[in-house]
Length: 576
Image 1: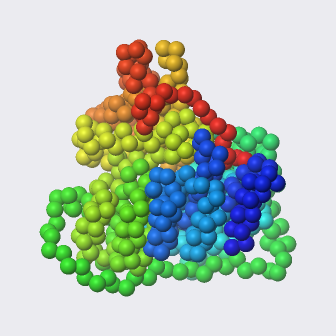
Image 2: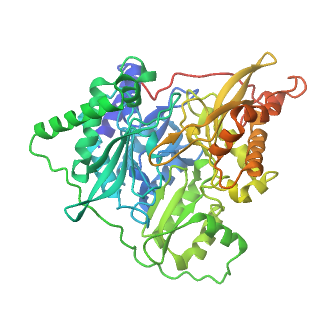
Image 3: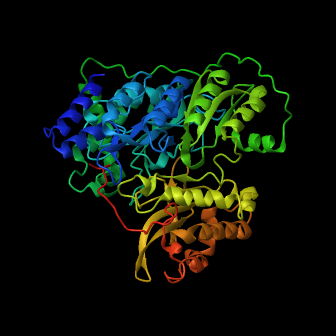
């Protein structure tokens, strides 16, 4: 609460001219408060959800924040399992921080050059393929590094993830600064818990795939191992050129992976030998337990074809018999106030109040009794959240884009909405093509990849280009990106199209893949076989525009109807 009082005091000092605006900016970023494009006294708050987990009471408070303070009145789920709220008045921020703190949430270090929110596999504790439940380890890591002195002023942001499932990558391990994958190792006839650590991944304008740091890090050494990586980064990371300040450059360009491993081993030995008070880094394991059985809901409805389609595409069979997880598709990553309150009520009744959010910008409800699936579906239908196809082709990932972001070029939300509309109209057959169901589409409003376009089967990155003497919003198109637990493969650049023509270009590329795919060929394998040159030629018809006088609408950005496009990029705050 002292931090919240200090925030209010800093606002007073800013208003009274006692505090330099740049100093206030650094202070608010440490507290998870961003600036908003085109405003001076409105902000975005990023509320951290550790490894994507929250409860019904917390969801209710987030709904209240959206209702009272945000514009629009929605919560936006991010690709790092957080909630964001936009256009909050500066004077109201301390009160908002107070409300989230009262239910155990914080925005502290959700921005700035710190350890950001720790992400985790949404199936942790309920997956039949997991080595063990990574939740207590993600929890301990998040708690340990929050407000830790070594993390207060890093060269750049630092991202950590946890994956528990064997051979599966639900959290995009290779794009993190540290990615921890659960491993069981037999030592003296006993199974020992540990992690395979990966370091140096990241997207942005210059993406790198993480490299393996250690084959097996015992669980008791997890915290000092991550801290040793952070200490090396703090000491040797680039501080002058922010474009090369992430740890990925230190590992891949400055030292190389082998030298980093050598320095890491020495740093960890020194940390363990010199830590005061003989710290205990042991993390107690824990397992998920079933919630109380819900009271039977009276339902006289019979299953429908729509229900069966939803159940097939939106449920996850838990390792605990009789229970499933439910993916709740949140179009464009946005959840309205009634939807947030409805999800909280659903969770209270059916899941013991438990909810999670995913990096695909959806909500996940674990611990739904199989027998309750039909009434849960009926309640989601009332909320407008029972669309089939969660985490499939039509479930597009996007960043906030130029609607609010200071450095975005295009309105990525506009393209995402146009693609969704297309999938439910002329391109609807693409959604039912079995080969296309796993295809992922991701959109960023600039090259920085907040929408993770580099690791999409079909990725789009906002750009601008002169056409017929006018600056026109465009999207750069990438084909065949993706990740495994070990490696990130970045999409092949095939060209760029005007924003208004990009939905048709996407439709054409998806149809080509569907029609030309051989056997079980992935998008990447198909793209490499048919060649980048062929795909560049395939989108050529979508790269031109008529004269401005003939159709001025084609020169506008999607989501900005009737507004003349102007390239307007402010200074990014992420690296401030």
